[in-house]
Image (tube, rainbow, N blue to C red; front, side, top):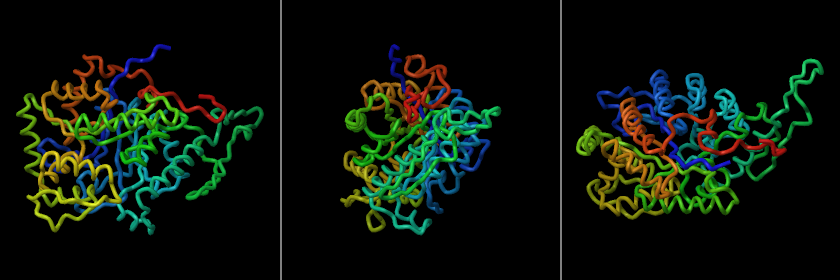
Length: 437
């Protein structure tokens, strides 16, 4: 079969109050991570625009100084199950932790979502960076590299549980009185360093074989985890040069594991601010920045750097900081950005308030499409995780003004060609233990 022409993948990174920390203050914003009507309309908009997937980030803590989209929000798998009922093609992906979770539970909920959505589920594997999370679970927070070692075993167990039953294990033969074929049952019986899981999973094999696996860590251990397991990598990159370097490194790791490099899609996040002119887009961002209280922006910066900055002058340079045990790759990205652009702590905090370290693109629809095309064609990205600054207007502008340009250039689909998330990504269904796909 002829190889399909490479096209851009698009994900909607959904945050109910907008991605910009002040997005909810925009006069046209309908904020609310617990506003189901809004979230359903946003999913419908992304599906009309033929996005590959909708993605929900998550964390296991909260507080009054958290990002407005994350202070109070629906549990992601519950929400995606609801959205599965109001969509038919859009992929549905969510974050779930390998440090504060159990493989059996994660395998079960994502298998269930894959069944409910008829093959559109995706799991964003995270190790949970923030030590404060431990207080909600009465647990010790593992160090960075140990978290990734736990994640490696966790993912192996989950995939094994998804393979508990062969695809044709449930004949439901009324005449013979056979509901489940015992010969097509696989007992995992896993005994490892971190987990002991007997199995089998009390869910039949998912429609995709395995739901799509996503990984978002950009550190060395994160890239290795992705190279072995992931179908999508979410990443944050500030320049095309940085993005190309990461892309090359990640693809080389994929090849080293004997995988086809095209089987993994690298999708940097970016926040588009769209205007009829560049000046209008610049003014839109300035308006949002003007509504940003530094007391709301600083906790987001401190969280990503992993260090307290309260003793430093906000209008002075970012100090030299030791490597954090939290978000190592994000901390390096922000530190490099501050040095490269000679940003003060206050200026860096405003950047984080807007995009949390992701690339911010200002411009006309054509200018934004040009930037996306450049990154795509120059192998800095296989697609993008779109982060509108506020909802619904920020998404409406992107879908009505930028997506048609990408389609006219032959860079993005005009119709879905399949029904599952794996179909959208151009990757095959995972075979069962007999090699049947």
